[in-house]
Image (cartoon, rainbow, N blue to C red; front, side, top):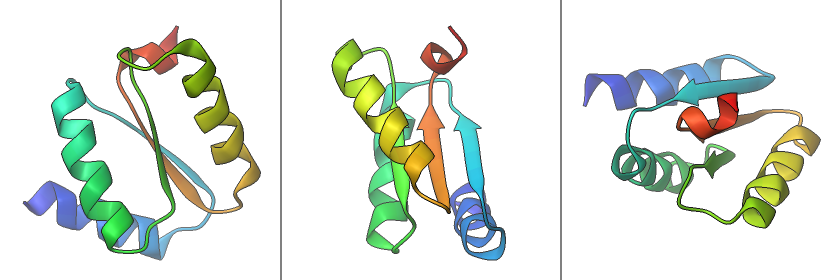
Length: 77
């Protein structure tokens, strides 16, 4: 819970692009739901998505002036 609170604070306090890596898709989905419900512009990419979807989310993330990207190690490839 403390980590999710920190991400919310960080997303509201700092501007620009924020990239956060997670070790499981399940955690990304939970954190994504929480942050998006709190009004943080958040996107996600992970290995369970089709490549076309990942590229679309990444491009949309890059176009936003302030946004958070949640990713598994797929973003490092």
